[in-house]
Image 1 (tube, rainbow, N blue to C red):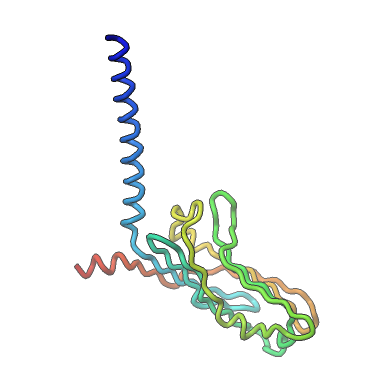
Image 2 (tube, rainbow, N blue to C red; image 1 turned 45 degrees about the vertical axis):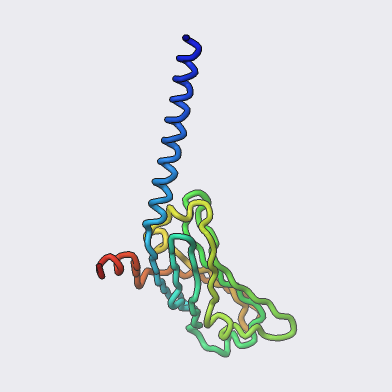
Length: 180
């Protein structure tokens, strides 16, 4: 009799534990499912470069980054023969500090990389969420910055860090809610 009672108690506690775990997971999934789509547009300017229309599109299933334009603020002739550039976008990460989230680079031997044309439209990258992505907030995205490294016509390597500012935030889920 005692053995049966103990087995029933253990069985009951195990089921309660699994039930709580299941409810928690469903609640977490519900939080993700109820999140709408946010579109953040950022821009910034440094001494030599300006970044326009960098977009971060956060959906319930994935995140897209990119579509920026980089504009050289100096004389175009100063970088016309450049044979190297690297553009990297960074976002803050609670665990790793600043984390690179998008990059583009080119190197050429025996000729220029046509830097001004190639950075005029940075491509996009779309993917599923990675560790810690869903915990990022508007403030995290506001702390995005760009590191631009390039060689000028004299072969001298230059580096500029450009802090981006939020210029627009569109919460698509609110638009749908307001229309109802």
